[in-house]
Image (cartoon, rainbow, N blue to C red):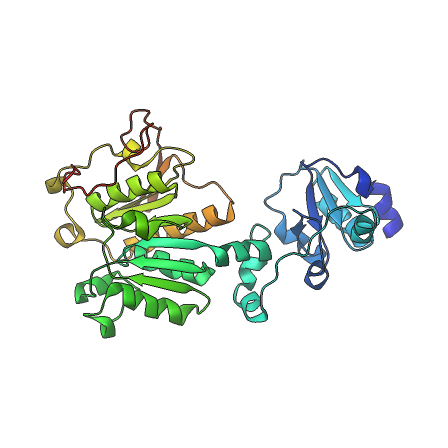
Length: 371
């Protein structure tokens, strides 16, 4: 079988591997990989190849490697049978790579309990142990522990985002419980941020929760939000959204925006390093009479669950650096029709927030004029 494989799968020597555009796939078992691997290689055991390479194009240059170059030949045959047209095997495998003095590294490892908890993540080549470690190292600020903040916080905590800061000065009310799933009947009257901390601690003890029973305002925003990797905006009012946008621009922190109204929701990513900001999309808010809050207009209870989950998805993509985040795009969702639509957003060169002059950090009134 190996002889036949050598007839169909070309071999490349360590010194000739060279080109950075090749995708390296380590087909060894996890206990072998834990002792060392080639930097940047995807870790996909040979037995999982058929279900784990969907993200690669069929003409992508691929070099498979194992310990001594035998299993990788067989893996190459498997890849060719799947339709991949540019597959090679590393001659001599990882042993030859080390002997040649080429660079190698010991991949990050997780504790046994963590490896079990996140095993479904680790099985994804786009995540793996290294990606899970990125999640555990990440710091995410969540503005609001209400309808949007609840599902976003729960899924980010379940995913293993290491630090979640929850900012909400409100207390749990019975009317919240139709949609704000961080809380329960036994929490009525308690601080929402404290209630969120209790729920998340029970869900995943790996997550450190910073509970802040305060509103984010101009006087504290820069201090409270500095040092986070991204912000999940679950605010329910325009003044806070505009303030968060300005803080994002000043601190260079991406914002995952979400909003809901009756049966409709919206999600977008506003990244100060790449693309437009919230004010490029909405230079001015609608008048208050055209934008009533949930108490006045009502909201379908499951809607924030959908939108908040999408926000968590975008946050995880940003942390891991995978997929195509919603930068420069606004996704809208209609719960009554189950239809989605995407609107392209252009960067406004005259935007008062992301233009050439850094925005002042000020509080806004209901019409988003400076107070």
